[in-house]
Length: 566
Figure: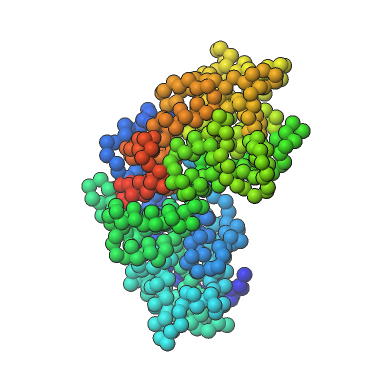
């Protein structure tokens, strides 16, 4: 890291601080109240409104560390993302009750993070301005004077750094810093030294570190975002990065004022490889893929697998999601019911596939009499199991909370472990332990958890298919309640079909997308949109790509709630 001249710290920091704080009012916005259990109206929650409209949210959402990394790479036109610098940032805390890692309520800047931002800004500015090739990517050669070149740089670079055109006052403030460059960096040429100080300031500006939404003109019950604000919502929602040149051009031309204009850009962006990572990150969280790292089957009981089973299962889920969403243009039903997936030699053994397989992943179609969708794949099954036995309790809780959007209360304290089988099946052991009449466990397990977990009893601790358990035939039948509808099922295949045929299940999936793309918990204002998307998805009229486009073109995405007005 470059060393800072001692005399520099005495005078330039107040200038930069004043620049950074200008226009930074309104860092704290009002937040909606989370919905009650089940995502619907509850005590203290108003009924869903009839029309789609925006919900309250923060006006300044700090970039996540992933967004910062991608934005810096694109802003400075670096060959690789500055992941080493981002690795020095303190971790963001998880927000209780929110599934994803982009909740604006939790994305604050404390002293530790601010110091890391400052050090990263100094390091990056030094790298760019002391490397002629890197600097040439940002400042084309010109015969103009240094001041004229600096002004052109401030205006063009500032448009990208602030994600909007700079005001005349902002341009002058940055130029004031440029003129102090020779004093700050006496060992550099005046032009490069001035740009170094300017780039440091841009990288520390709240208009770079936050997505600032400055629109305040209310139209009835909403505040329309301007085109540049819509562009930023699109780029950070679909790419986790700053807008590209085409998106900036669309904002400049005013085409993001219309739903058609936003949809056109959204579909273009979803064809870009950067959207693959966002879609993968969404499903990685939704399907709890990080949990796969804890898969530790007993290698004595299951000698056909290795300690890398969790790693391979995560790769399978990633390839499966990408194939359904982008290659097949599929819908949520396909994620729940498709027998097609990707395997290597180890997963092929678990699935009982014949033929020659290697370490490379290849597409296969599993036996549709045994497998349907992501819930019958190794990752979900093996990550919800002990080292030797399947775990219908945690399998059922997962389906309830992630697939149905029905929260399960925390279990009581001091629950004893499951007893030894003593000749019984795994299902019999779990049922006797959790469904005893009058016990504290019975109410949840008998009606909410076990009926969703027992259909997976045909799958052992590594996700292998089985028809017997401890010498007895497997009983995978059940009668789960799926959002008020009691559905008898014979096994996991029936359950997958029942989930895919349930409108509320599709609405649950849409709700997750609304939360993720907005970076906030679902609010009652979202209910009409979620309900509409659930109907369309269940009817097979909405692919996952189409569903995402519907969210980012919705009234709630291109407008803000008037409650946030200063």
